[in-house]
Length: 596
Image 1 (cartoon, rainbow, N blue to C red):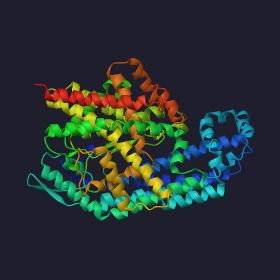
Image 2 (image 1 turned 180 degrees about the horizontal axis):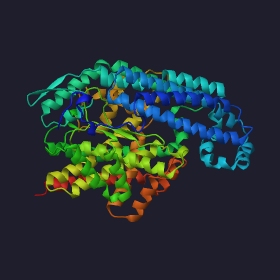
Image 3 (image 1 turned 30 degrees about the vertical axis):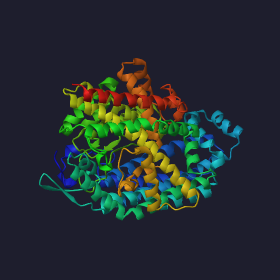
Image 4 (image 1 turned 135 degrees about the vertical axis):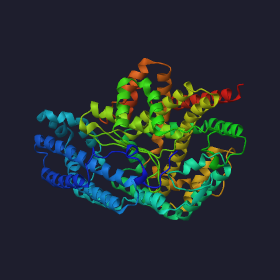
């Protein structure tokens, strides 16, 4: 696989094209100034509630400005992440964050004024101005927060304070991707620089000494700065807890539940069911140990059980993913083709690029996908995963008014994970050798381990962090190391040998800066298991329901969205069925591995 030292070396066809957002820096700045002007004009709508037509006019302008601010934000984030730590990119991102603060301040009057209305007065608005009905779900979600919204002045103060201090994730990311220098490793006589972008590739190397060296170098450096990482994490958690309590919530978790309109029972059922089946996870580690033929250490957990030198070019990866997604129909494939044709993906890795993969979306344009292409099956999975998000976003745009083109995060991962199931099945079904079949099976097994067991484990850790801060404790390196150690001991059992570096994985997790996002993966992998298995069995009804599900915007609550698929998240069967499917995959893997 071609390796690159800098972005300048990467061919244009492998870089994302951001001109759909802004043609160049001058265009960005012109639109930035336009947004500043528009935001100022929003302030004149203060005290507009005596005239429902003025409310409607305000809401139209608010949405229009929100879309522009989002586009400015997406451009700033993507420019920053393609080369983290560049001064101009940091400055651009800071400008947009300031603009977002000004937008929040300019609109902070609206919710308090809306909530002054009695129930009768609120309902009268839609009779006096029928056009407002198109905003009713939007307004209903604000009005239900009546007991948690403060005065306009108080809301503005909180907004300004949060926006001035909420840089914890950025600081942690800069430390991880730009400030740290992790050293070099010799592979095949060539010296390679270790970075967060290529770390997993080193951990997939068949040479245990290279895996161990990469693991130790990486985590030794992480540990040197872990006190700072813990400080950033504490600041983020404490901020969320404080803001939630200022608004009258019990804590940040209950604010999250209220925002999703879900009960705590959903998550208690998820955790209880998953942890009551840790024996299935332990079977997986037993299988790994048996197939690999040695005791497992943390640096062995990304190694493919089967030795495969299969390496894909970017073009080969694109074509394989397309073949896998064929079961979702021609319209779906057309949307996939547009992703490839129009350069919506930034593929290649090099030092300084933000690690990992994501799809970033606004309300009126095609989203963009960032990844670190390694030429392996995991890279194909990333393409399938993030394209799932992209196409979900496009279907939402096509089928919803602008104000409802968002997506509840607890719903969002279904679209990406279904694609990973389809990809693994495609590789399994088209395999020419026994090893290729096993690779296809292992891929989806790993997806379930990571997204169900891994997400529940770390989601519980996140809950404990918030509880610790509520109890006036400080999140420190020692606290996080101890929390991680206890968590790993429970989930790994006696099947993975922990060491002095095992406890530092928390310091690399950007998800802890995403407000209880991890549980969403566990919910979604459980639902995706059901959806994908039925589509793969050729159940037309589920395919049709799933395509309708992908069109649902955020005028519907998560509970309503999942009902399109016939899913009740409070029912333990949702998670039990996912684990049963996981067990069947392990059994199938074992049968194929031992067949002659």
